[in-house]
Length: 270
Image (cartoon, rainbow, N blue to C red):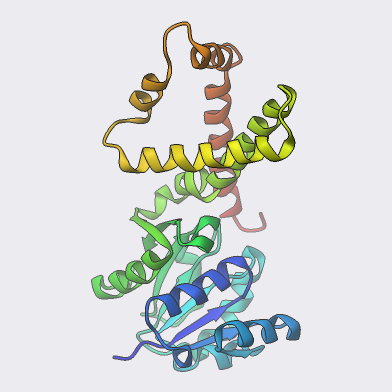
């Protein structure tokens, strides 16, 4: 069966999914985007050659895969709005934080497949991470189709939905932790006398290189760190201060707070 796609919401993640669908080899004619702002709609038409409408029910008619990329507060009303127009056998993919599959299934016709996805922003450059949890009516074929689509934007881990708060804490919010570290590294570089431009360049390439090494190596992060840390050397001096100040414990505590907030957002009225 020919796949037809509807992307509801054209923010950063919505546009990323538009790009992923086209990168997967689907023609622009197989895709409709829902966007209520005329200027943004014109940008999408020009950039991707896709059809854009401000009418959500119109966008989902005939779609085999519907991707939700709106704010969490708007999900319920959106599902109610489109429910009668969702085709039997369609797959609804939510890229919205904190909204469970049971909530979505309750608003849609019985039997509609629902998949919950936690993306992260590096998907914009094809280096994203997606945590995927299928709902109760998702077939193996439907799940495989969603995974294949998301893999055009990065890597995919299929997890039980009860683990989505952990996915949010580690990878959903994770890029911000890296950027936070980058801010500190740049500030330290400037404090030593480096120009801001040079400190930025050193930090960018160091993080990119370290991430690539972590990705390519068979060794654990602990082993990779040990190789850089000579006894009584410069790296050891820095790590000793990190440990003295409880940096690792603070990072773990912060990520657990992220997971807890994710759980709170799943509660009605959060």
